[in-house]
Length: 122
Image (cartoon, rainbow, N blue to C red; front, side, top):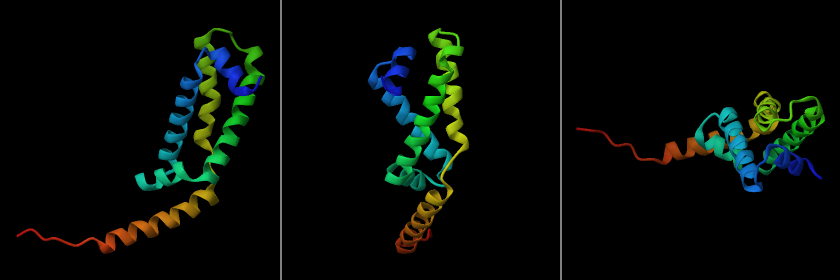
């Protein structure tokens, strides 16, 4: 049984609920490290960022599964501890990948700003 299935089983989630939570956690992470809404969307859409993020997420899930035998087996308690492990995602990020996206997003935003006409109120 893979980590996803173990977590779904122990937290009593459906696969759709798990996937929705995973997406929400990833989107919140993108918003935290994105400098603008456009930058956050670029982080969300970037394959390299997503690949790195999911690999790190799976490591944290594996740590949670290793710790599960030592945790209370009530669903609410397991969920609380699960989010404690997963919350560590908010402290890590791939600076070189994010910086590379930041530069390209800033250039795009500058292009858009320069090409917009300026209107003055009378």
